[in-house]
Structures are given as structure tokens and as C-alpha cells.
Length: 114
Length: 116
Image (cartoon, rainbow over all chains, first blue to last red; front, top):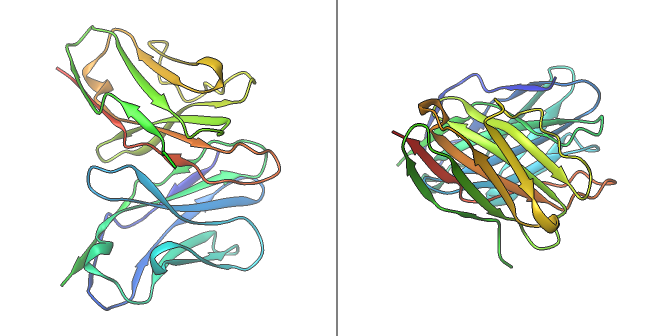
């Protein structure tokens, strides 16, 4: 069964500094990887996904993520964090065996300090 | 266009009562998913519908939980004889469901269920 680990409960970063949210995964076969963001009292919003090809994936709101097969990681990054990036971030994985369900990590609360 | 909608947005019920949660997916999306988000537990997969295929019910936590999808569109998640541990936010998502692509899921705002 596929699974995701997001090792940090909360990530604090100063506005303007680089932001990294960590994610490692476990899956049989080729992984399909996703990042979602959840603002307070809102549903999850899709940020980006990795299916195949370039290991660096660019997504919405200036976010990008790097797929690393050897480390089974898919860390989310943003070069310069904004206060408005403060939210809950979820990493998710789907296996490549025709199983469409997503396995989510527990989420990381990101706090961007002005 | 309209996104995924869910109703009600909040539901408070007494222990032992049955509840129904509704999801309207994005028009044209053939795949529909239900997840549960509990405090500190992340998102837990419940059930998945794909077109006319038999649903993947493997995530339902007990036989008190059931879901149906009528006409390939609207879905209802039913929880019978609710328990306090059922309190959570229930999220619905839909996707295009194209077999040859890996499409992202679009989530609704959720229904917050509180069992007293």
C-alpha cells in the first residue's frame, strides 16, 4: 500500500526566505505525486503534480517540487515565501498500478512570519 | 465554472442518529472520491466511484458507512448510528477520470460533522 510521510508538523519561515516542505513516499511501481494546499475553512487546492519526465515540477503560486527517486522524496519549495503562503500543505501519492486513490500525508502547517 | 459543492457545510447530530452528506461533482467528471479529515490524522480515503464501475469501498471504516452515486453525478455518503469518533470533516473530490492520464482531484469545501 502506498504511504506518505511529512516529518515536520510545522514549518516556520520568515517572509522573503526560501520555503521547503518535506515529503517522502512509499509506493509499489512508479509513483504519481501531488501537492495540495488548504487555507483555513477552505477545501484543498491543487498545487502541482509529478507523473514522469523532468524531476523539477513547477506549479501554482510560484511553488515547485523536486522528485528524487533514489531518496523517494518530493519536497515542495518556494524561493521567496509570502505571508499569504501560510496554510496547511499536503503531499499525496498514487501508485502506477491503476489504483486511483490518493494516500495523503498528515500535512504540514506553514507559518510565514512577517 | 462551478467547482465541487457539498452540503450541508456543517452538521451537528446526536450519537446514534443517521446522517447523509451530499456531493455535487464538477460537471463532466466521471471519478468521484470521498475522504475524511480528522484533527491530526490527515486525510483518510473512504470510497471511490469511476463511471459505471463497481466502487472501490476499501477505505470505509465500518459497515455503518455507505455511499452511492446516482446517475453518475451526485453522490451521497450515509453514516448510520453515528458515533463520536465519526466527528470529522468529510471531503468530496472529483476528477476527469480519464484512464490514459493522471489527472488531479478537485476538492469541495467539506462537511464538518460533529456528533454529540
